[in-house]
Image (cartoon, rainbow, N blue to C red; front, side):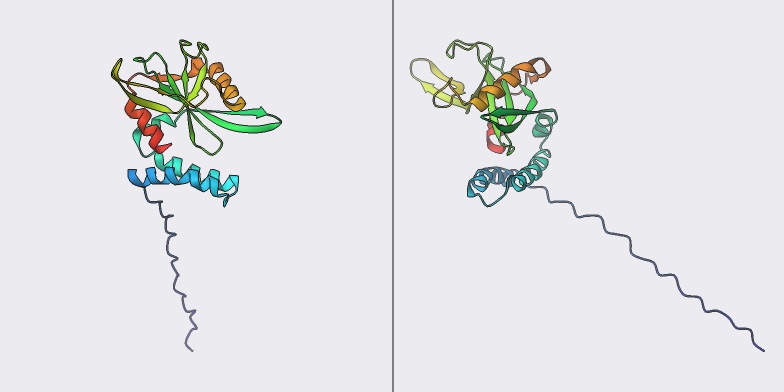
Length: 198
């Protein structure tokens, strides 16, 4: 009588899970375009604050593919300030620009949406506020028949008066001034890049 044999079920091999597709790295022009559009995205009111934060976080991660911004964004100090009973969040980038030629170092601060605000340390010659960190717009090339052509700090309207938020941010920068790493080889080119991408 023949012996019964159990048929062997072939082993089913499951395919290995595919690695998650990496997000495509944006070009420099695409990054600049995304940065320009972000302000409009905020104003549109179509996104909640947490959604805007997520959009900006992904953008900043893309920006870190550029060596200069990877170094600029590498060290951060998060702060919270209160004005009229409302809390505001800022991030101080503790790697800044020495700007020795102008005797006025620069620090970048990101607001709650991850957008940049530039601060410089005043000598007090014009502002009468020596040692204070004051917000400003950018570096501007000035053509003057009297004084020649030169680069200078483009101030906001009403300078040196500014909002209570910025006054408190200024105080917070002053508190950690000894922790700032001010790069001597960064100059107007880096300031221009900060304005274009942040």
